[in-house]
Image 1 (cartoon, rainbow over the protein chains, first blue to last red):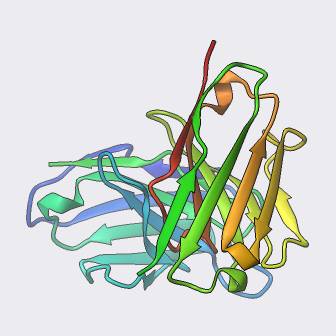
Image 2: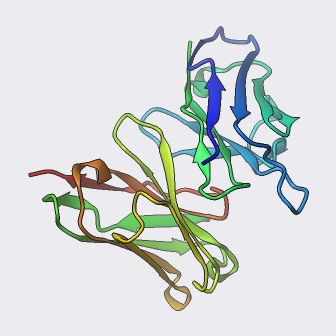
Length: 111
Length: 114
């Protein structure tokens, strides 16, 4: 199985300041169709996950442009340009290139 | 408005069975691969199954293969999960989601305990 490693696992942030989460995979996430199926999810306390980004950098509908994704092959990053109070929660990266799809351990973002 | 409503969870003894359902609205169910994802209390996420639009192909994670049966009824916009031989390790919130996690419901909680 593809192992997804996130860092840091805990991220204290300051409102209005940027934040960044790293995600590394044990294998390249470039699919045979040339797409890279790496997504980022946000899970606020007590809520279901919500997808923020897919295929590395494409934002889902309604996701603020404060959230951006970058990276390639095995090394990916989620950036929040200016943290807001509502961004508190756990962030997961997920790969859907290889079965079984796998998630990172999660990064807890707290103010 | 997109809605996914999971149901059927509850408390079950080890070795028991449960049937979960997921009814969707607001998007064309038959156009999407559908998945089940679970999350043990206070833990991370585990993608357990990925089912093709017509149900003809299913990818199932090793930890549940042979114990869980996955199906869908496109006429009813519904996804099903039949769970057998449950153990305490199956205790989790179970979510259904289309494609690679596009939308999520509130989930249904399965608790396996004696």
